[in-house]
Image 1 (cartoon, rainbow, N blue to C red):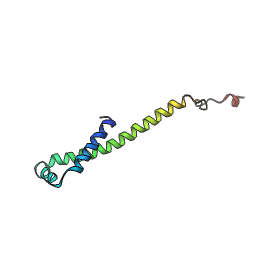
Image 2 (cartoon, one colour):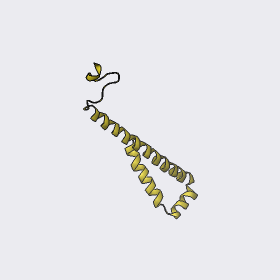
Image 3 (cartoon, rainbow, N blue to C red):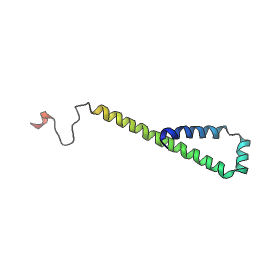
Image 4 (cartoon, rainbow, N blue to C red):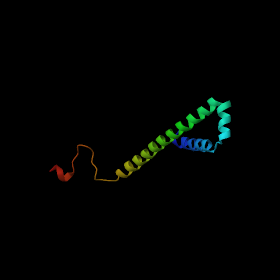
Length: 88
């Protein structure tokens, strides 16, 4: 999924995990241990993927904005070219 989709999943998983009472945790640990373990692993993985994905997303937006504004700037020249005043 995209980073924008992983973030709500990670947040919801953290909220569910944090709101889980000790009694509920003991019940799932004793009756559905594998399900609880998979839930914990998925919350951790989604949280890490969300942070990495959002940082990549923000970096891409910054790069796009920077390249958009640089196209209007005349101070940058392609590699190997010199300004008219330096050619003489």
